[in-house]
Length: 460
Image (cartoon, rainbow, N blue to C red; front, side, top):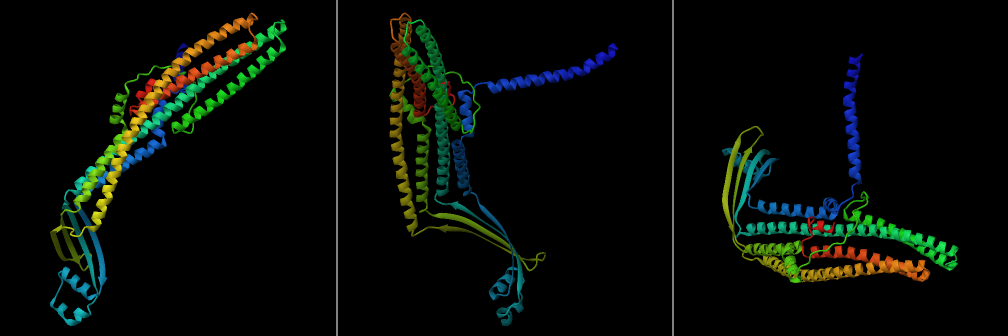
């Protein structure tokens, strides 16, 4: 009997282990699903799923294929043709019999030449050509294609930074909206407590009925603000989902917004960094170099071209029969002595080069302006945050004093509500300044071309 119970226990043990493992997995999945979305996760999701990133990646692949196509011009061309024909055209018959090496004395008779019998031909041909020298036009086109491929890669980096900036702004908007809800809930609780206190004062004869009505209006206003804050949070989540390139984002309580002290360097140093690292400016510079190489390639069209060609052909009267074969090979040298169309193309490419040069100059000036504006905005945001923090502390202390004075009957309900409004507004101003400070720093990183997913960690 004891042995039978042991066997049953041994059989049930693996089932218990599997059940326990299954429960542990469920708990782990549930815990992972409840983990708050981090800024890094939002950025990586956006870079993977954003339509703008997909477009930039397609442009990179297109430029890569264009570079491969340019290199293919250096390769020799080889073609195979199988031609089956039949006819009684005198010239066709004469040439076909000659190629088949089946020509006889009888084929020289006038009747045979003027009214030949139909002849069939199975022609197998191999033909090839190779541009041996084209005044280095192909090499310059290859160099231009390589530069355009590098330009598309730099443009893709610029798109990535734009995506990161949008995600950072949307993520910070969610954090700010969450903080606004916290402030609104606190103010609603404070308004409810004030209403209860005023009600006690009215019952005790220490306050009039109008004070209670004012407190009720204040409580209703705080409830309306909470409803508005909850709506703003919904809109912020929708904006984050759009920035991430997703129709839906699993919502969770994010890590609360925090006040940061961001580093700031000299303006001239930031401008120098931007001119060196901005991917969009780098893409324009590479495009300008590519256009210069393309212009040089157009000039090469005026030079001599040397090409080699060859042809081998097998002609038979039937598919399985025998016939004659022949080949031709040669070298061709060509020079365009009246290049009117090429001159127009050269003028066009010169104009394009001038346009790209002007775009690079204009973009450099625009980058300088963007960095200067971002630098000033960050300085202003930092000062605003400091001022808002001091105002919040002062308004909190003022509210505490007025609550004590109202409790002692030394202040009116109007004074107390005015102090509460000031304290609530100061909190909103402070967290808005914290939010604006983070956005200003992100704008500065973007303006200097250093807003990478790794650099965005400072904003978490």
